[in-house]
Image (cartoon, rainbow, N blue to C red):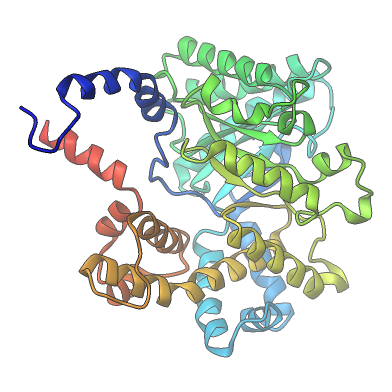
Length: 428
């Protein structure tokens, strides 16, 4: 029975529910939000045949040696504009990071970083790479995330790329369980059809090797203007999450291929060129709410020789710029870039921690403060702090002291839909 003053009745509600049934399914299936797992703050690329189980430790040692040769990590902090107190806190954490986990995500490259060496050599290297990855995972020396980038699906390299993918996955599967942090990267994507072809390829590999459907997810590299604006005047990148739902893990921006495709001269190709910002803004809009993550590209200005400090300052500034724009991951191409990557990232999270933690505490404790935050902002605050914890910039106890929440509650605040799903599952 309708209460006094209520015009809509149960039949009206049912009709509106039916009208919005497709919308409800779309939001549930295609916009599930982030899955709450850790996102690495960078991806390191190395030619596939140069990988060894000790590579991560060797890169970390080289980064430490370069920093020590240029005045240490506090000197690096000063170059990046950090305050005296901040650089001291950051320096100790960066030094520890480069010993304990110098690379968070590693890609063994069979594409631009490897080139065309003939089928026989690449077949052998694909098998060898898989065996070495298995060895590194078993020894505990592999980065948390590791995988390959194979050649693109354009006609000249399509079969070669598929063979490398097949050999790598098949060799891993023959050794037992796949690495938990396995990542596959599809480069130079121009059309939705290429992503659908990749979906078919990994589905077949799952079928052949008895893997659960969806086990082989992949990243899409956005390196061509055709993926940002297609021939029909629409944006193909916005369709990707919906033609292969749940299959794509991330979109990675390709700085130099994309810029060159738009005829930007080499001197001005950069992660901060206006064409780069436009492409990345489209990517950001395309995947909002889908759970697909984003990564910025790289700078090819490398900290070597007499250029170390200038390259560090540039890299640190670019890392900070990406973080401020919501791109929490980027590419690193040289061991010395690890130092500036972690120094800039740690400073970003540590600088923002006191204010974010204070606002989150006010929200949790329902305390009136200078800012009245809504649930969406609370999620952003918690997500910011959680990223800082996951990469090692801040510690659990710091968060508890400043925000008054432990890691489980922080995670639930950052990913409430995930927390609700777990609660529902436990009650069912």
